Length: 63
Length: 244
Image 1 (tube, helix red, strand yellow):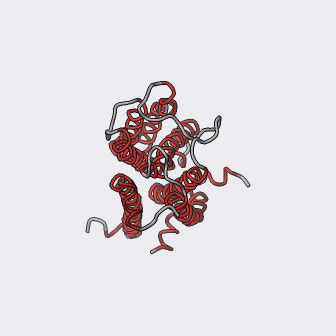
Image 2 (cartoon, chains in turn orange, yellow; image 1 turned 45 degrees about the horizontal axis):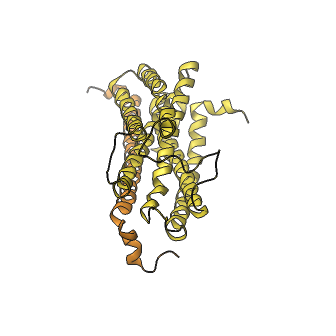
Image 3 (cartoon, one colour; image 1 turned 90 degrees about the vertical axis):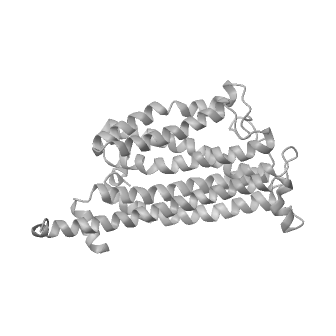
């Protein structure tokens, strides 16, 4: 183990701000990409289901 | 196994669906192992102290940013040469992840540069060419969204990527060709790694994790693109009915 205590771990030899902002921003980017992917997939699924409904009942379009 | 089997969108859709959870879980497990070794096993660097630990995301994300661009160019060339559908869909699925990882490489480089070089940014060859890579990704994404017609949009994007691909070797060799503030490579095939074995292990685990993350996200994204583009076909209609 490299660290004597947790506070020493978070301090990162005085470079805590730089190290943790690197890891923090990376985590935010990864989570944002995953959430965006999920959101887009759901939206697309809903839109395609709606389009399929329209295709099935052409007489209702425009009424 | 016939590889052409998977050139057909319905077969590839199924294959991708099977691979996504495997890739995602492997990425998570390797990432946790890599971070554990990187933070709790790897020693303090004798020159850089603890700040060097940024390397465990900086190097993998920078590698992936370049690799994904090469893969995009490859699929763009295949798509243009064979006029196939799937390569262009893969290209579109790759670009957002490539852009995100390049942005991560630039950001982690900036917060590493500040304590080590005393500056967030310099216009040296390595940094500038990596920034150009990010702009190429964003330019391609913008081009795709600007051209309504899918076929023309795909071809334009592939062409732009094939022109932009000359930037990748420039990034790779920038530290050799020019006198850069950015250090030369610590890991290479022609020399032993210039770092402790445990540091190296963590970098390699994080790189494997980044690969698998990219594979999982890109395959999940391409599945949606396939369904969108093939929505008039019988197999997608059946799929949508099954899902509803």
